[in-house]
Length: 343
Image 1 (cartoon, rainbow, N blue to C red):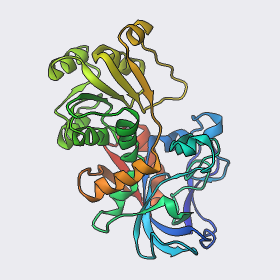
Image 2: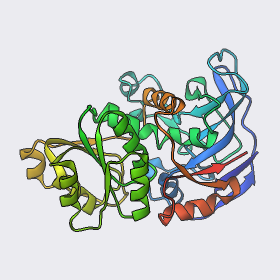
Image 3: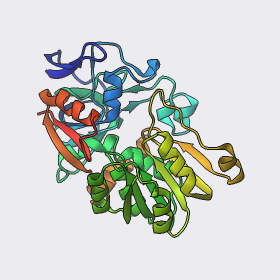
C-alpha cells in the first residue's frame, strides 16, 4: 500500500510502498482510509518538538484523524460490516489500569495511539479494534468524518466532560483555527454565548459564520476591553487553544471570579503563567484537557451525523501532497482543517 513515511525528524515525508496490514484478527477491523485530517501535532511530531516519550520510532507513518470504509472484519465483530463508513478513535488503551476504569483512557500509562506510537492513517489501510471503528452515516462526507477524531471530539470532551459547560454561560474561545471553530459550535450547542479572538482577520470572519456572537483581534491592546464590553462583563469560561503569554494574560483579564480556564492548546518549550493572586483570591479553576474519551468521540460522531456540528474542512490535498499541506499549516495558512484525500 502507499503511505507517507517519516524517515528522519525534521525531514520531509516520503511517499513509499509499504506492506499491507495483516488481515484483521478476532475483534479487529480492516479499514481502507479515504481521508486523513492534518493537525499541528503532526508538525510537532515531524520536527521532534514533542516531549521525547511522545515521539515515535522511525520510520513512522503519521496521521491521527482518519475515516474510511470497512474492507474486512475479524471473527466476532458485530458492530460494523464491510462497506460501512467509519470514523476512527485513535486511542487504544490497556483497559486494565485505574485511568481506564475511570473512563480517562487518554491518560492510560500504556496507551497506544494511531499516528503516535502506532502507524498512522497517512496510508491506504489501517487495522483497529472493533471498538475504535464507529459507524457513521454515508450522508456525511468522509473528509468531514475524518476530523471528528481530533478537531471535533477534543472540543466536545474538553467543554462537556472537563469544563462542565452550562446553559447560559458566556465563553471566550482563544484561537479560531481548526479546534477553535469547533469549540465555538460545541459551546453554542450547549446554550452558551460565544466570543472568539484570533490574530487573523479571515479567521474571525469564519468564526462568526460558524456561530460566534462576535470576534476580535488578539493583537489589539483593547482586546480585553472589547471582550468585556461584548460579554457585558467577565466571562464564565475561557477555552485556550494557543498557549502563549499574551493569550494567557487575556484569559486572566476577562475571567469572572470563580471562572474556569480550559487549556487545550500547548507549545513545547513555552511556559506561560497567570499571577497567583488571580488564581487564589479569585478562585479561578485551571483545567487541562487532552484529546477525547471514547464516550466523547462517539457523541461527536452522532452530533455530526445529526448536523448539529459541521466539521470545518477548508483545504484538501492528495496523499502525496502531505508535505505541502504540513508546510502551509506550519505557516498558519489554513483557516479551518486540512484533509488528505487518500483514496
